[in-house]
Amino acid sequence: MSRRPGFLVYGLLIAFVLGSAAPLYWSFLLGSQTKEEASQGIPPLLPGGHFIDNAQRVLDSLPFWKALGNSLMVSTVTACSVVFFCTLAGYAFAKLRFRGSGPLMVFVIATMAVPTQLGVVPLFILMSRLGWAGSVWSVVIPWLVTAFGVFFMRQYLVDAVPDELIEAARMDGCSQIRTFLTVAVPAARPAAAILWLFTFMQVWTDFFWPLIALPPDNPTIQVALNQLQSGYFKDFSLVLAGTTLATIPLLVLFVLAGRQLVSGIMQGAVKG
Image (cartoon, rainbow, N blue to C red; front, side, top):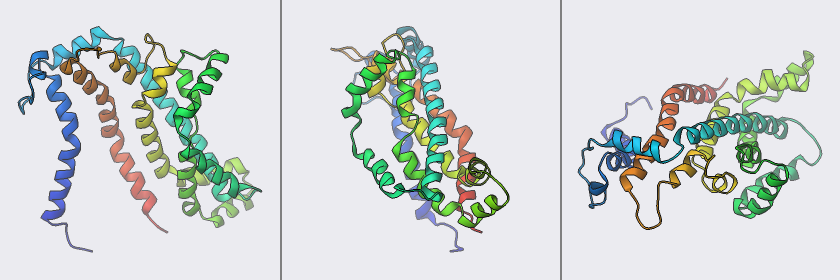
């Protein structure tokens, strides 16, 4: 266990990193070509010099900044809400004893097997009756809590928070909500960070429901990129330049939060 990793391990890690970065590089490669060069089969391995021009065409072709702001707002609000409510529900299922907790948890897990497409029509009708159709809140409200998040946080908190620590907090006079905030929330920080990041990515890349709920003049970034395509001809340089621009915020997020995420995971892995 004390040996350093060998060349095979580092070789596999390098191959994995290169394979993961290949799609992004391919998008940037085609996005830096002209329209004619991008449509002529395999492009050269080095980027061209037209990415700035193609990016400007993207900004001129669609409401990019409005769509980017909508996606940032929707993804951030949804991720924060999912982390809070799922941590609260996961703590209740993991550490509180109440009648019907087992069947209710099975029901929550069973809802994960229901396709999202089955609820699109009644959900759209509900949003219309509430007056939220066409608003970004129609994209935020339905996903404020997720079954996967509840299950994920419940499984983590079962072992992360000892029952003795909760009993000690109660003996000190802490209420349920204070016990949750001072005992469960610090222990759940690593899992909450992962859930926040995964939820942000999922909402950022969501296309199906925003396409139905939002109008063309108030889209999210993924729906806006769809406007770059035409029915008979696709300008691949324009589409992939827009895709690269839409990926940059996620890369910035990983760069800024990567170290905190890894440190949180390692902190949560420490026993005793």
